[in-house]
Length: 310
Ligand SMILES: Cc1cc2nc3c(=O)[nH]c(=O)nc-3n(C[C@H](O)[C@H](O)[C@H](O)COP(=O)(O)OP(=O)(O)OC[C@H]3O[C@@H](n4cnc5c(N)ncnc54)[C@H](O)[C@@H]3O)c2cc1C
Image (cartoon, rainbow, N blue to C red):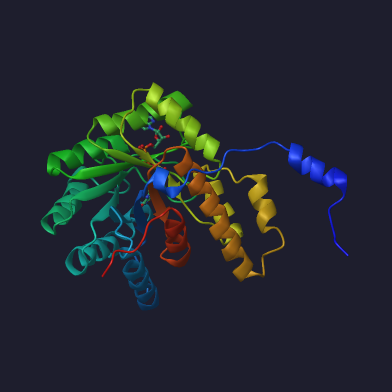
């Protein structure tokens, strides 16, 4: 006995809206990628980081960046991690640096130490006040990231990356003021922006339109965070002004005790996000790795990035 779908179902499929296929990889080309790591706190986390670095290094990222803990709390660990990257790998490291809790002279000194250690790329950020407090510039410090960019350029000719906010920075006076701020950071000497994490691609693409209309020409690289621990990610997003779409909450609903399925959902969701952006012409991606390589490695492969032949 043969089985065929009821006639009305087939008709629905035949008459349903047809969407364009995603362009093939021979059309989109291979994107440039970069990775963000955080400096490890314990020997176990240190081992995890270096295993992650080793695996992702094979994908030949344009650069890898190392975060700076809130209020400069990881200054020495960030420095040690970045210097080890310089000394023991062929990767190009970028050190995150913030304005918080330090005078200009102290920040300049950190930058000078980086330059002397061979580090040529800084991700320049304002940073945040401790939880529950309002940000106020340190007396004698750099007040905002744009001031820091200008200060760093006076120290040495660093390559400088800054932050951008497709959903507007939570403390911005207005969307227009936030875009002006991004432009000021680039005019002060930064050559690239990386975005805060976002999940709605249309928000990002609209942001690019607005940036171009505001006269910004430097690349605004999407910051991609594959989400497998939804509860933790949602908490982080609330703090940084990223909206978590209902569809995403729905995808992870009921998977709290099923880590393996969550990882598969995470990979598929992030793959869909980056392939859509790639189809829309985006050819550079920055991945928040959380020092875990597997999801990012798989997603980079899906984008067409292959490990270098050894
Ligand atoms: C890619 C990326 C990496 C990050 N890495 C780190 C990290 O390693 N460590 C860390 O602590 N944090 C990090 N952050 C978080 C960042 O420090 C916070 O988002 C912080 O609140 C803003 O930093 P910013 O550099 O964007 O600040 P800014 O560009 O200085 O802007 C901060 C706010 O001030 C407003 N503003 C700017 N100039 C003025 C002015 N003159 N007058 C009034 N308002 C003004 C802006 O519109 C915005 O609302 C990162 C964020 C991103 C997107």
